[in-house]
Amino acid sequence: MTKLIELLDFDKKKRKKLKKNSSTQSTTDGSIEDNSSTQKKNSRARNKNSTIDNSQSSGNNPRKRRRSNKKLKKGYEVTTKKIIHDPKLIGALQSLPLFYQQIVVPVKDRHQYNDITKSVGWDFNEILAKPSVLVIGTPEAGKTSFINYLLREKKGYHSHYDAIKDFKSSFTHLYYEDKAALQRGTDAASLNSWQFCKITKYNKPKNDCQIQLLQIKNQLLKEITFIDSPPLSDSMISSMDKETTSGYFPILNNLIRKVDLILFVATSNVVTTSMSKIIATLSPYISKTIFCLNKSDKYKSFDSLTKDRKAFTDYILTSITTGEPKILCTYVKGYLSNSEVKNYIHNDMETLLLRIKKLPTQYKIARLHSLNIHMMECLYIAYIHNEMRKKERKTNVKIISLEDVGELNKCINDVPKSEFFLKTFPTIISIVSEVSDSIKPKCVKLDDVDALKSFLINDFPYITTVAGEEPEILLTFILPVSDPNKDVDAPVKEKKKVIKEIKIALPMNDDEEEEEEEDDNDSNVTNANKTITNEKDQNKLKKKQKFIKINKSTIDKLMKDAQ
Image (cartoon, rainbow, N blue to C red; front, side):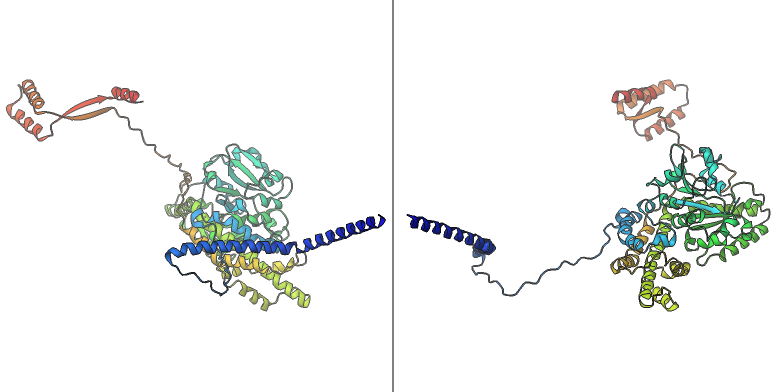
């Protein structure tokens, strides 16, 4: 019995071992079995498909198809870069925000464009914002009066909000709103929908120089906006290079880059000031700048006007590097006694008013020009950083030689308008070198730089041509006339035509005509026979008609019944 029990126990142990071994083998061989099972399934499916194909082809062609032993090559999808948002369909400016975000921002942020240029980039709101006009110039040149003249505000825009008079040292952006309001400091910075909210980072505290938003009810501001600038003195210009972190000049620098039209308002005394430094900053944007020799009503003779205009023109030409400045003689107050002077100045005023009237169309080209300069700056700074980084690795020195400058310029030679860019920004290499200790140069990411460069070469010129072909849009607001002393004639409203009577012609039968003729003969017995016969002949020539008159009261009744 004991032996039998031992044998049974031994058998149980053997079975347990066999089970363990079988379980391990099943786990290792499970994948093989699964593969074999899947292969069997696939082979069955193939056999089924082959039988179906043979059965279908047997009716048309009894021959069986032979499979070729040649290996099929893998297919590759060829993708080409295309403008996803076609500017012809959605508009030139409307197509830009996505491109800017995906192509320009990576290069701009990597090489710290904002910190180097002391400016802010563009965003969605700025690209699609309404046209904006910046008015700058010498003290007491009539900048604010010029804006009030264009807005047709006889009392001045200050009358909408009296507290604005306490902040004359700030840039004031005039914007449309039914209820007057002033936004300054943190309140203005928190307005993300405001196109200039990012520039508030250069604001000075409290009552010092800031960019502020004044919302007033004026119909012209529905279509275009204006920026009034604080007075600028020679003492402020002397500290222009020192004031880089906040205040007047950083704000002005950003506004010049972003606005669509600049009106530089000055008098003949500007030639004795140091405003040439400010005019030099306008040189890259000369195409969107108009220089106004204001207060021209003081000239009593045409010779004195032409003399001061020539001196004003020469002063501007010595301050700019490229382009031809647009110079106009203007006035917004006073009277012109000399007829020759009057005709000359009024022609210039008409030219200015026409430019503003066409601004809803022309601002697109100006904005695209500003964006082109911005993108060229980003690309060129990236190449400068890359060259400085190479120098630093080889010689531990970041200095760029004249030979290196030539090589850098070759990198952008195939980009449109590169010659204009290099002429108007000759100091960009020195600016990048000066801040190289605080802003360390980085090597470029080839994919990002190549994408930006190809966009500037291929896509951006196409967008610019589309913008030039878009239909013309004019201001609906009625601008003032060239003579500021005359009021604008109000548009004559068309008078409503009131129907007082309706005359209906009905055809007549011959019997009715004869009866009427007999009645006429009876009533006109006293008349001569000749006149009667003439009237009969005239009536016969006319169509046989009978007229019924319906007066206004019956018309009103018919209209009420119809309703």
